[in-house]
View 1 (cartoon, one colour):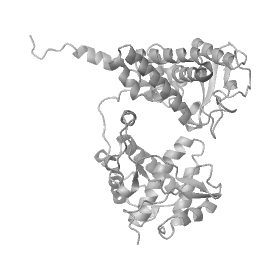
View 2 (tube, rainbow, N blue to C red; view 1 turned 135 degrees about the vertical axis):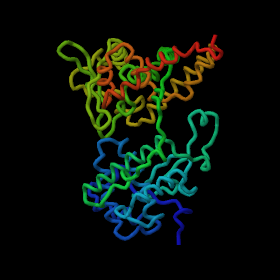
View 3 (spheres, helix red, strand yellow; view 1 turned 45 degrees about the vertical axis):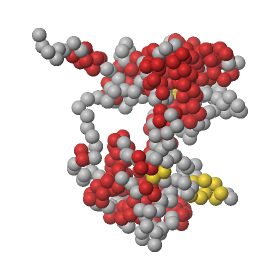
View 4 (cartoon, rainbow, N blue to C red; view 1 turned 180 degrees about the vertical axis):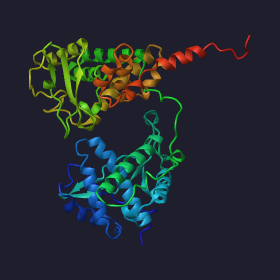
Length: 418
């Protein structure tokens, strides 16, 4: 008999591209892939999981996040507890949360790999896939450190995701009359698992000096090798000046960003239409400098200075081949290359301490940096709408005036009062 704690489970749910539109057809395929037979009546579990996940097919990132949490729960419920979803109670979920914080070694991997792969025309389980992954930080990776299974820990952000996603999931099951309660909502002492802060978490951003070096470095490279770096320069300016998320630059199932998404209104003010989180479409103001950046990039591409209505030229095209960039990984690589080159320039000019933060910076820091700078002089309602924040509370996190004033008032406190 297979010990579920000593044997890694097989993945359950493939990507949206490969999931059949009919959950009924997918149920038996998923059951047949499992090394250990799931409990009786598990077909209903799979069906409801599939219908829940497919309702998030408008956003690849959301689908992936929800799939991860639902899949882990189902694997634990079936193979460790021997229960189906309606049988789970509050104590089960508390036990599951403890399990997630200390999963068995067999369930932990050291790198992200695809759940399935193609083999002789069929989709088969990837034997290297694991439900949990132990990772090192970006800086540790650059220093040659390798991930170790023994170092696995579930971050507070990940634990919050478990609560959030599973609560939404069980509410869905209640609406479908598949179960009698939401066991996540019954956990009263969430503080046992989740930390709370009496302060605002600082926004992760780069300094103005670091940004100056980054953009100057890309401009220098664009002059030396425009074929390789004019696109990089445009990407960096988009991420900073318009607070774009990385997913809003690449083509996916939701949208294909094209030059025609830049458009002028009756007052000849320019805007960019993007499809963001939750499949929400918003209009972003295009500043004069950003418009100049657009003209520069288009002229490099041999296009007219400004796009025409309904122009289908990809906003970010491939350098080799035709069509739009479809991989967020490629954009991350471009931005990381810009950070690395700026870091080297800062080191050469004796700015070691100021350069260090660029070693840990990520693409998303550019969005944070642009918003943080703009809330200093733009109405925060305007920043909120350009950033696509769901509420003003999110935008308020970028206003650090209060923290600066608080520190300034304490800066010269005496340890020995006079």
